[in-house]
Amino acid sequence: HTSTGNMGNFHDISALLEPASAAVQDKHEGFEASNDLFQIFEQMCDQENVLQNSISKFQKRLLKLKSLRKELGKEMIDSIKESQLLSEKTHKYSLDLAEAVQQIQT
Image (cartoon, rainbow, N blue to C red):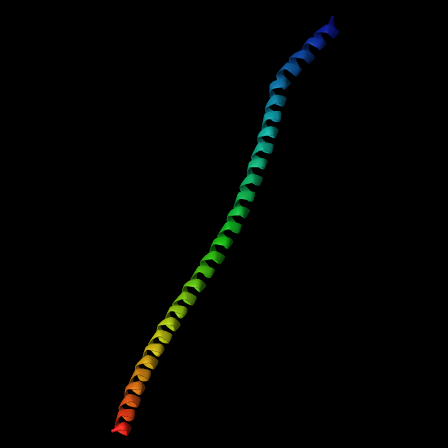
């Protein structure tokens, strides 16, 4: 009689413990899930850092390119000016030469 009563008590206790152990299991799974989420978050942060580094490198290269383009443009303008000066001088020399030739002939 008492043994069946004890068995009944055991069933009662296990029935009481079941939701508790289910809750612990849920918490454990929840913890694992949040751990996974945190790892994903960390990976995203790492990838964001990589992206930020790439972006800043790209911006630095862009600035270098812009300054190079500026220098090139300046050099081109300078060389155009120089060639204009040269052609003006050449034109003047050829006029002087033509005048000198005329003076010699007359």
